[in-house]
Length: 328
Image (cartoon, rainbow, N blue to C red; front, side):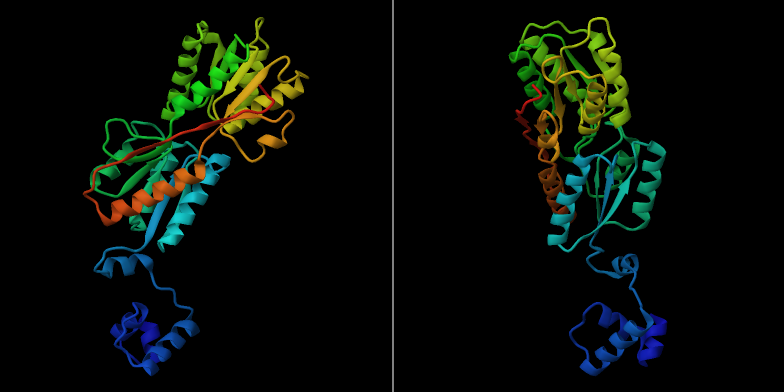
């Protein structure tokens, strides 16, 4: 700012008034300052502007997600960006890859950037780092995953209901030995989906077999490996329910590599319906989450929290939808 002031022949205070859009300025002076800013390629610091601002807002929010390779989170990101843009907020996105050390680092970076609020998919339901930020008073909305015993805004889908719908459909279609390939069991959504799986087995009088539940890391490779384990069993399942879209793709690779026909020899339903589901052979039956809407509504709640820190916390649970196609 000092260099801009020297170039324009004005005070630093005048440069600050131009940057902040003060109306009480001579037009010639404003033009001189704007020319100096352009000539010097000066970019005002968002953090400094926030610290000086009476409103204490830099119009900047953070987004912490576990896996940008997962198309579900890409759609969540789209919803976040769209709503943030409508309210003139900029976005910093951090992908921590389900690595808790990386998560801690990114949260420290986001704090140093003086964000106004945070959208976070916590690593665990007892995530200490995100919980600490809630306790410090940073406006936070949890996305897709909540925090245990913490009063915080949450937007997610009804995971238990979605899993029940999937396994209920398999049982109604005549399949009796239904396996479940889970994501990381520490993730709240994985736990809720397993509960829905068990609920549906009970509802249809089907016995729960621990050997038919495999726990992975929510990634493609675990879908490949765990599906292979299931199909190598002496008494393999006649149907498989997969815990997320990346696991589904891995399981499908194994099924196709083995030359197993879907759904004649094994049926499959995935949690997460993606744009490519209709392009598969046969088209995939899947539980659809309103991912874009989750991102949009979470951002809407966060902006409300920023503007009104004392309002009552909201848990927004959206309904899933089973998209029935030919894989079951």
